Image 1 (spheres, rainbow, N blue to C red):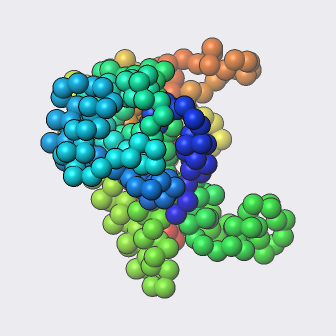
Image 2: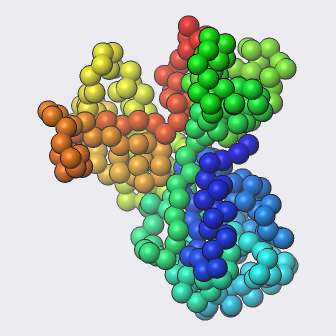
Length: 331
């Protein structure tokens, strides 16, 4: 499963001096796979610290934040020796350890020769952030192009890349596109879809639906865990309302999010703003601002914060929440 961010990471590696790499993105979009399995192949060894899986590793950052001291502590706690010239250090789910986030500043200033990469799904919620000290990228679900690459069907991929203009190419690519509308781009859903291609379509569909259901349940559990001062119930109400808001637009108009009846006793943007902002910072929704009247440059100068249209970050999860089945999409 290839990702379009990989060439950017390889370019980062080729520089003689570099800032720590930071991969942001919603949970389960493939950040760890990208860093460890794809990017990690170009290193002699990968030393990965997962703060969610091993909270005790946070003690490596409890004292001095000197890169040398941190690496010594990580070596002692992990039992692995780190070679500064050939190895990659991955700080996974870095948002779980605030001191580790702060340490990125010192890696940038005192050890720019090191290969240090971090990832996290709640980066936007952090109280402190090393501004200007990291090279940051956002990993979203697989695009349609990445979905085609995962299919391992060279002829179809070539038709897409060369923009082949034939009936056969159109039919095959349209078939793949409607598959993508159902499956979406979450890596686990794509993996299950292609791994079960020898099975009946009903079995394939059910497997993907289970993946989608598990992902949505996982996100909803996270609302309570990471909501902080924001009402977790408000976050969940907004998240659950996005599909219905989008399905309510049946013509070509771009209608803004209607806040009435989304959450009990809240009907204005200001009352829902904290929940919308939380979901956007966690990369679960995308905000779009309709521009009324004649478009003028720069568009951002004419947007109004209280007029916003929300989209889910993945089309497969959107259809699952709407209850739209594979057969309906194909039709």
